[in-house]
Image 1 (cartoon, rainbow, N blue to C red):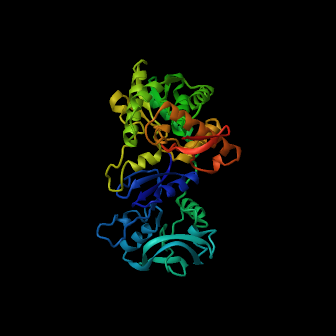
Image 2 (cartoon, rainbow, N blue to C red):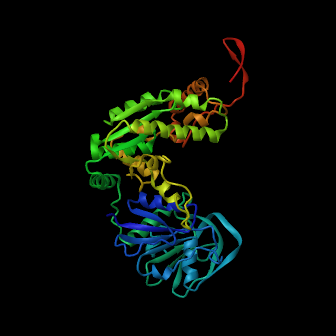
Image 3 (tube, rainbow, N blue to C red):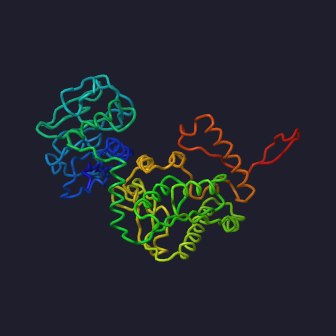
Length: 449
């Protein structure tokens, strides 16, 4: 098992970003609700307390016994986490005159402290807080200041416990990654979390988990399901069967191109042309939510029908990734949404679930795919909604509207690639509006979409 850093989530919007930064430093971490610290886990090497939208002085604020962690593990409190460390040890945290949000400069830095090694005075940091620490406990000492924040960073004497009022995980903080790297060094982390190590351990786990059983997997052409397929294929080979459904709402030539890519990767893929079914069921429907439900239900029906043609299938593979798992629970433990990315399939098909990517962030999925030898154009694909062009067509979906949108989208994406811009943007696409306009075609006036 990999050694790990535990990140206790107090509700900050940047908690996942902390996790991504730790993973980028080749260290495995897990994000858990603030009240869910794993007892007696020998693989834990350190603890990070996240920020929070709450004030530590709010009666309903999320609180834990920080004394139970201090001394047992290296601890780093970030923003609210730092204030919580101070408040629970007898310090004072008060509302600031004005909320501090944005850039600040470190006026003084204790360069001898190992957490701040390589961090210099004058470095820019990012603040986002309404409270400030006005008095530190006796054993706490300031190791960094700004002009407005006396305790921008502190250390507990005799302990590996630190707090920073700023956010080292965000891009705007200069040396933020260096600070987190310093913390991992103090935790004694081996830095062995790499795409290669993940593949090696996951393939071994999949072989043990699945044995000689057969697995079925729905492919979308997207990054997550594609990497899931290649990883499962690495573990169980021909006992994996993939199904790729063409609902008629894919991008131009996408069905044929993706099938060709999958064949090149050695995957056993059943391609299903279900365009007629989806166009028929979408006829006359204009409400976007109703269109989503029709497409989702239709996909499940087609997938289930194809799956029943196969024999001795025991497992359903899914491309669930770590953000899906994290977001399935709030910090209060309340379910927000199911993390199954093909809703209803496991219950309907009575299959056991295997999710080999459920520990990975999206950028890690891409790096694992590259390590597996997958083609770059598959890994760099922009996100594409499950209902496809069905929700990029406002109003009723018809085959003619789909053709128009596919052509327009293909021109747009081709130009982005030609100009070297496709990989510079996170997402790009065209929308077909139910509006006609005047134009010129063949030296004649036109009035159409």
